[in-house]
Length: 357
Image (tube, rainbow, N blue to C red; front, side, top):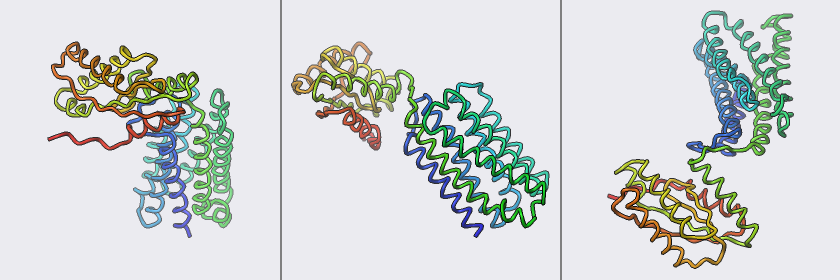
């Protein structure tokens, strides 16, 4: 039965990690901003909860003090990192992550130098303290104005209260008493932990949908956001827009043979070429070898391609490149911003093209 309860905690933590990173994370996250901070802190907290659940199973199977120590440390680290993340979102002093790490290391060391029953109580105290701090931080402005923080604060407060009640029971009747086994056992704690993880995950996903990205200029994420805004502006004046997707097939070879800076310089030259030759164009680099141009629907395909090729060729000597790489064009007509987003995601998520031999 105990193992089944622990498996429930493993499943909840694994689901939390998966949902957080599928919903808001991305490989090579270049977005920055509050949503990225939320994913970073709560994602690592969910990973800590997952590690804790696995180590608790290992401890049940005879993993000894090592499994207990790492499990206790990660158990304290998870709510501590949630508190640190909320402090970060509230733009408060950056002591949260340091304190979370220090608390986990302290718990790790204490498990080795004291009886395991005493270590359980200290772990319970740490969980109650950090969960309380996180619940209080979630009710502090400006985070408190975001939908989902009420559920987050409430679930953390209930979890803190449950762990505090375990301390009260241990102080009154002892950790091996019948009352402890009824209301504070490890099995019941695993179930409460699993329910708390699920509630916190739901709250975090609600918060993430409302928080903004703030990628730095020059990043792919910044260009994707700019292209979405430019598409919105164009669609307010036109019923549809043409998305011209231009690839430089040789760009990975150029990165390998010359440098990443040279490849980025070439992509920038392609963007500048479009802006110089095409009217009412939105242009950006949403993926590593791809440039997007946004035009009002109805532009002549052959004229667009030839204009861009000519301007791009003219720019090559200016950046010190003797040859002009080939350009590959795709033309798509879309009627909403989501269509532009889907095209950008299809380019961003595709596998890397092999270098020619």
